[in-house]
Length: 314
Ligand code: ZN
Image 1 (cartoon, rainbow, N blue to C red):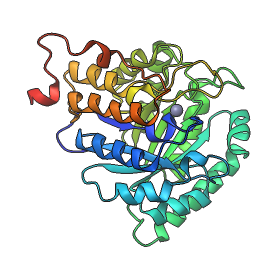
Image 2 (cartoon, rainbow, N blue to C red):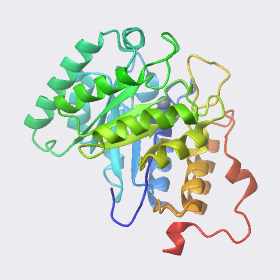
Image 3 (cartoon, rainbow, N blue to C red):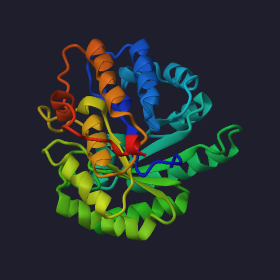
Image 4 (cartoon, rainbow, N blue to C red):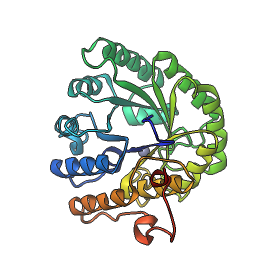
């Protein structure tokens, strides 16, 4: 975690937020977005996904976006990859962190990446080896993303024990971080409290643990608070709540970054992010995706009278 901050927010709008967008987000717009958000103090931005362009044309410019991001100072460049091939491209592009995703439920993993969980873990071990032997990539952080950890659109409820078992396998295989994801927005705060109490208790001394929530059913920020109370200090979100859920076509997307920063700063936790500057970055999304509704309550209502963000109070 960057010195001087209490909680690390991770922008995932450029990946999770736009991956099911049918409209191509122009490369120059992506670069403008990440540049402006880095200037607002965002410590980490997941800038793209390394997947075959035929599968997800939205990320056909992944290498170009990473190359541009490397010219911007002050933030960690993350990218997602579901496999070894994508990891290789990400290492060659020079990302600081690779997020590798496996679903906790076998059915979802087969549907999403067409592999069993065992096969996904074997692939991850090859990625760890590749990272270690690729010149210049030795320090690249490997994060194991545990998708559908709080519910699955195919399997339904997901037991805490299954998440613990998969997390342990990834930590043993060499993951530097784990991300516990409510991919389809099923979770409620009590469930989050139970899950994160177990995960934080078992793994937070060895690896950073990130919470990834969607606001699909309106409980996203309540879930953040539940995870905070268990000691979790890393949160994914997307600016203006961009994104959606392929399994619930009318649903909203990731939790709203601007509202997350408002929550954390109001709780006295420094994020290092300038909330006013962050809100201005929404204009870049609006300009590039004019038909996309932007979510977020803080941007609509503004700051409460007398509100002083923890980062500014410091
Ligand atoms: Zn997500």
